[in-house]
Structures are given as structure tokens and as C-alpha cells.
Image (tube, rainbow, N blue to C red; front, side, top):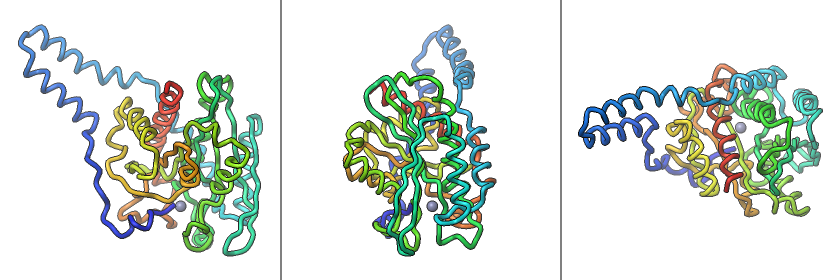
Length: 331
Ligand SMILES: [Zn+2]
């Protein structure tokens, strides 16, 4: 993905900064204390302040360590740019992992600056009781132009592949109470030569067009894209082309867990795999942290390695995606 051209010419816009969960909580506490007149009420308030953190800790969390372990296995394959042996191994890895699930391999030929290239999206379906579909997606390949620098995309491609695999572990086994959840692993997100509308996001453009033709798009209640959110230093931007109500639900999900400070403190327009869906009127969000390392120095460099991503960030992502699914189901 890359910043939309307009954004490249301007300094980062700051969205109105949100108070962190802790600040919010303390603020409420202070206000309450000044209005409380009786010692008994103060004691109740004090007790609440003591126990709320324990209640938060007791909330079950997503298994980010498992997502990280999947990402580690995926990175161990090595670089996986289109046409490489590593790409074939990455395909085999996903095929093997989802062999007992409803897996569809969506193959197509992309017209690229290096000629026609065979590409392959992976779609894994988990049926729900409600009529409609929630899509969670990532891309899984690495950059063709970086094929000579051992670029493994630990954050860019692998972290979110691991995240979706661990989410599958969470939802597999019985029919979901809400909408069906489909996991999509896109091929060909990265530019083959230089990023442009025609040289990028091959897999998502192909699938959105195909699903437009066969009527599938009309069933999609929400399309959520995860990109580069394994970053240890997590600061997810509010992507400005994303659908407002879906952004609000993600914000609400993050708030439930006290994760406010990791989400939407800044905003920018990013060109990514969600756009083909946005353009076709599907409610969509790109959950992306395009601020990776000092001055973004880990992005698309050999420094995008496993030590830069964390189980903690993947726990935050998983908690928020699963809670957002719950909120969409309630809508
Ligand atoms: Zn990338």
C-alpha cells in the first residue's frame, strides 16, 4: 500500500486527539470526587477505582502469541514475491493449514509490467446463522522489486496472515451465531514495478470485480482489511476513505478494551486492498499502521523482521476485530 498522492504532499493531519482510556478514567474520577459529599460514597468510589483494573484484566483476550507464532512460521518460508519458489511455499503453507476448512483458491492471471503473472487468492469460509458476510482480509505476498534484499515482510504481509490464522482458530468448529465470516488472503497487493492504480492490488481488484459480477458483493455487510498492524509500536491511522460507521464500530471495540490510544490518533488516505471494495459501495475499512520504525524506516526494507512485531499488538488487533464482528452482528 502507499499513502494517497495528495497525502504525500502535505504534513500529517492530526485528528482531534482522543483521550487515552486511562486519562478518560482519571478525568471521570476527579469530577466525581469533587461532587461527592459523603465519606461513604467516597469509600465506594475508592473501592470501584481499586477493582475496575482487575475487572478489565479478567476479560478474556485473543491469543496474540499464537498469531505471532503463525507469523514466525510464515516468515521462515523466506521471501515470497510473485513467481518465486517462496511464493509457492507460502501457497502450500496456507493450503495445508486450511485443508479441513471451506477453502477456495481463486486463481487468475494478472497483466503486470513484467507480463502475465499467475496469482492466487485464498478464501476461507466460516458459515454463520445470519444471512450476510463479514470479510476479514490481508495480503500475503512480498514485494517483487525487493526480491534481492531478502525482504521477508514480517509486519507487511506475515503478521496479518498470522492474525487471520489465529482468528480462524477462534471461530472454527461450530456455525457462527451472526453473519458468516470469510477470511481472504490476497495475492499481488504490492506493485511489481512502481505503484499505480494498474500496478498494485491485483488480487483485491480481481476479486472485487468477480464478486461484483456474480452478486457476492451484495451479501457483504462489512469488508475489513488488516495491514502492517503487527508493529510493536502500534499506532493505527484512521484511513480517510474507509466507511464512517465501520470506523466508529472499530473505535467502539477498541474502547471496550481500553485500547483507545492505539487507534485513530492521526488520519490519512491510504491506497490499499480495500479500495476496489470501497469503489463498489461495500462498507469497508483499512486497519493500517503505516508508521513503521523511526521515520517509517522499516517499511519496505530488510529491517521488516520478526523482532519488530509483537504478540501484544496482535492481541490488541484480534480483540478489536472479534469485538467489531460482534458489533456488526448486532447492528
Ligand atoms: Zn508493503
